[in-house]
Amino acid sequence: MILDLHAHSIKSDDGRAKVQNYCQWITTRNVPIDGFVLTEHRQFDFESDYSELAQKFNLTILKGAEVETEYGHVLVFGVTKPLTEEFDFSNITLKLADVVAAANKHGAVAVPCHPGRVRVGMSAHIEEHGVPEGVHIVETFNGGSRGNEDDIAQTMADKLSYQGIGGSDAHIVSHIGRCATRFSAVINSELELVAALKSGEFEALTFKEDAA
Amino acid sequence: MSAPLDVEALKEEFLFKVFDEKTFSFSGQALADYAIACGETASRYTDPADADFQAPPTIATSLQPGQRMPKGFPKVAGLGMDAGKAVSPKAPIRPDVELLGKSHMQDIYTKTGRSGRMVFFVIRMEVFDPSGTEVASADTSVVIREKPSV
Amino acid sequence: MTIVKLADVEFGVELPVFEPDTSLANVQRFGDASGWNSPRFTDHEHARKEGFPGALVPGIMSQGFLAAMIHRWAPGSVIENVDTIFRAPVIVDVAHRISGVVTDIDEDTGLVEIDLTLVNAAEETRVLGTASVRLPV
Image (cartoon, rainbow over all chains, first blue to last red; front, side, top):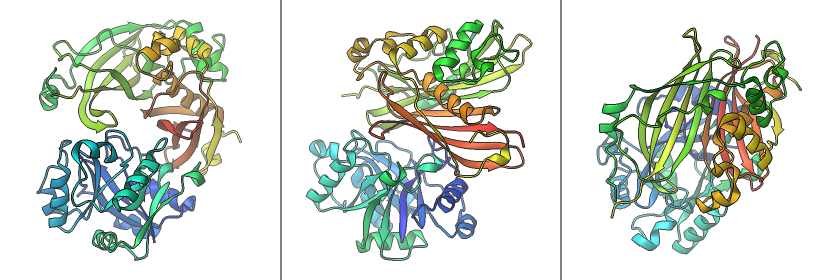
């Protein structure tokens, strides 16, 4: 099963895509993914219910978040109400250690994203802050990466024995599925996603050359 | 070293209040040059002699208020850059017509980017023709990279 | 294929790729017409002193490129909104390419949503845009 683990909808301040249009795009263009995770910036979207869309298009649509720490941006999968009460998702100066600890406490997983990117990626901050505790997975393929950012991410992941995931970081409809993650498990819920990530049975994929 | 901006206080004080009014007018040739440089080929945009000659639809984003920020707005250190622009044309803009642009602050928010904490200011200009009809509105997002405090 | 009416449009259809003229002479022409003729846009050396790789194509000009691309595809269309996000500078005298795809069609209102992406030769996204365009039903 292949999921794009990093996408934004109009719920994010810089997102321009409606979720329905993501679904229609994936179906019409035969994008080789089985679903996606909406990781809105600095928030968790409790309001939206995409179950009807998921059923209509036979896709898995899950929700996560993208928060901001001193190590850059971090995806959080398995967000629950109690987790959102542990720290302020809108705070752009979170401590990665606090995010990881809260995620662990509430059965979630924290994954630094686009780690090869200057300022908002983890790799650039390791020299200053050291190797963070508790990180096991990073995003090694990001659909918005420029230049050698994915190479930097992969090199860091190899060096620190992190596993890699892929996500498109789509903000517009046609960018969904540019990168994704293949799981050996079938995933239909955030709980199953967390379990699959913890199992280590996954690999990062990129379809960027296909999309270009 | 300037202190980080208190965004909530700024929103409270400045959002939605018109801070600038300015008039604009374009000659037919300027409109045609603008359109041709952008790659327009239809004569209603490129030929001032066309019976339906009008400005290209994105022109409202080129209009700049007389003052960039409201009076009393704190001076922000850093390099200001366009982060985005949205334009909604509502009626054709013709040459040599005096347009009135009214600007207000539509939103202020922060995020961290490739270059540290960034503050975004969204300034909306509503553009009116001499009859008072709104012919366009344009949002300009200006991002300023804050200098880190030490 | 030139688009005349809404029925000519299908979800997911790609607009013909548009290669905008980012030459210094064209940016200068645009600057003279629009008033956006700061040396940041018209002088490579000046822009480099400001820390940029070269003179910048004004964001409003990139937005104008997107609108022109839509008009070339559907000459009779009426653009209702163009929303652009500037991800990275578009450098003058550097080749760029714009692609566009239809991502929504509203049969009732005649509105079509289009994703627009301006990339450089390395396929790096410099400008993202979405547009709402009205076509005769």
